[in-house]
Length: 135
Image (cartoon, rainbow, N blue to C red):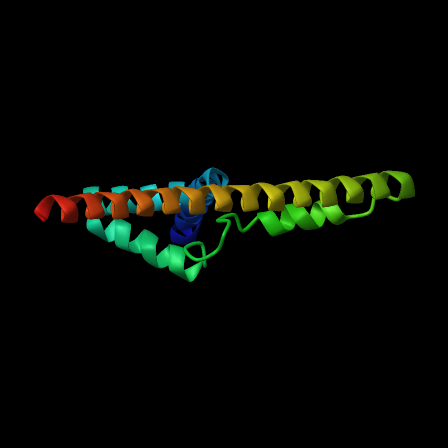
């Protein structure tokens, strides 16, 4: 009986520490998970490998957002308060913010495409200049 009482707090503390670290990394985003994985590979490769497997298993590697709690927050924000006027205002505000987010993401995509085109055009110009100088 004493062995169970001694291991239970240790297991609870380990889960608490891991849970806190997981939530902290989730709040920082996918970049924090990737940085932790890379540092794990640099300092002790099994840690990096374990983080990689965990990111794949938990689907953090391939999702847009790393936070598993995002859905829970979204569901909480959609919960009715019982006040129809406030719920309508909240729904309109959330819809407007989602539209703003989509517009901003489209803007960023256009910027990336313009940068890619500019870099490609510069490459082609340099290539043409190099071809002319060879003749």
